[in-house]
Image (tube, rainbow, N blue to C red):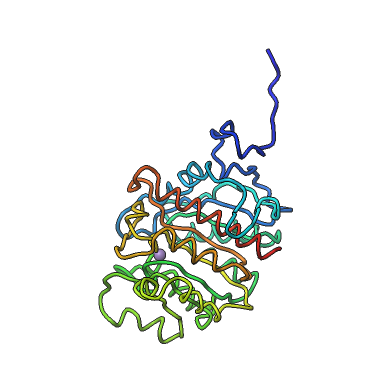
Length: 314
Ligand SMILES: [Mn+2]
């Protein structure tokens, strides 16, 4: 019997590693030392208020990332040549306990940051961003924030619970984890409970670029708001529901009238030149997905953000 050989996964052109299902066929390692970027899955959806399933997001984004090729011709970037990137596996959440899960996420992201790597987190519902931001702020201090989402996620509570996927950016602001006047929320839309829902962000000086404004004036005009975050360390949180459910149906809280996938990619490319110290891609819910198109979009969002990081290191 021929002996088995283990080959490094360098074969972007070949389907032979498809069964490994790491993010973009990257090497898998739990050891984050020496990496520039550590991609982790956070399969937790205990913070969801409506449609569940985001705990299966990392698995499906891995599967749908197998078609990603290594060169980004728009940004002229070869992220995996410029950066040492690996799939560092999943955080083990506690599906029964969001507070315990937050500790586990903060611990793992803290390890990545302590090793000098950028944490690239694939959720999971949006509640996880609070725990990631706790680790990021511990390392870098309060950061500037680019938040792409159809919702502000700044509510006070639901049913008396202060921790779920509708509150992370209120809790994070209260905890001083990000700089509200250096924060831009892109893609906000959809019905809310009243005009008062926007007060918290307004009071603290958060800039909102509504989806309607992006449709009326274009992505290029929207990007002008990034002046607020330039020159600072920036965290990027990308909720897949920023994209219209026609393009991204597989998500927990869909809102019509959203960005096209092309607009979302253009927006992300506009982040090139920012000093991004961490990011997340959240709210992919495979049970509501059609043909994996939402997970495929998330995989491409991941590739664009890695390309943006690579440009920044150029
Ligand atoms: Mn969200």
